[in-house]
Image (cartoon, rainbow, N blue to C red; front, side, top):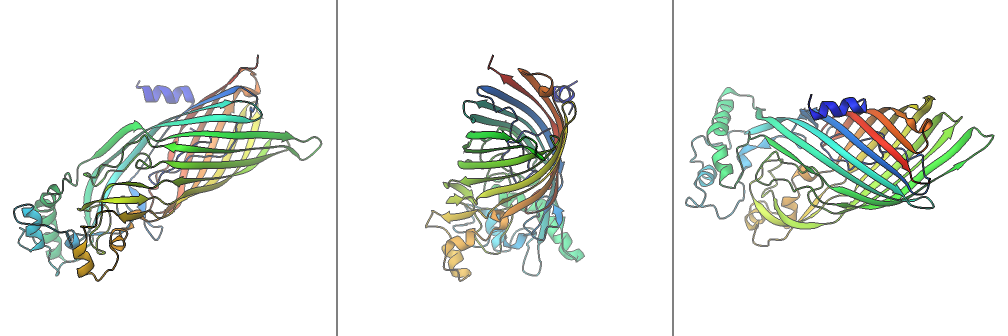
Length: 432
């Protein structure tokens, strides 16, 4: 029996832990409840395992399509538009492609449109440590270990004629990877995988509660917290078209979150939560489009840019039946998460002079921001959690077991990866 299966058995295979750093490639986890024990110097520890997979993405019309087609199909014939300083000596394959002398030319008589498909899988081990201090103030650290993998990468054609189909297939099999290699890009069908400690969230917050007697509402609880996302995960690999970052591509971010819920008749809980992440800009080397006719994951040119990720925010609501049989609880919830458009600013004045001339564009940034890869994305997610809290029976050492399922119902420019798993948690009360 491997360690993963053993872990799931110990857990009762996921999570009511109210911490997550969402990303476009999977459903966000439930981020609802506050901890019930707000006593001074109490320690909470949660360990979560989750996994999920998909072969789809949502496009601009919120319709499922191939994994890499969320931003629309890729036009082969525009692959090298406006790229400068290409010579027969420096990049012979690209030079031949631009001049139509390659083995299988894609000329203007052909649409040359393809889609890219693939299979995505992710696994996560997340650890959350929360230390209550005094008067409701607490410190919290969230450390995720993420594994992502993409395989089965291949082409899907959208052409309609047999002659065009044959020409494009010959180009893909014989010419394309020779061009990509001249820009240090690996073979398009090369699988991608990465396992690492991802970005870490360090927070300070306040939680509290008030009890009511002889009222339908027996308690009101909530928390507010603020923190910083520390970029630990590696950046995406610029030389692999299927590469993604497990985190936020080396960007620091400020994280704020709040929650409030009411307990009714001692057994029914209704609540809501809201959160946001405000990212700091970073300047580094990135792949950029050189024409407004280019779009998607296959981009040749590299340039120094200032990257300004859009703010990410989420809202949610949930209802819970708690301690209906001892410490047994059942929770159902909904959340919406969205990241606004990412904006690039070119920091290399020597590039894109040809694009300004050929496409009658007055601003180079218009060219590099034309790629829909940087568009706004969002997801609507449903959450289900079943858990048992031994805090109903034990005062000082109270384990919690939970299983969960997070199902992305609808989205845009995101991957509909449903997540399932389990959490084991402990509460230590040091007030002897």
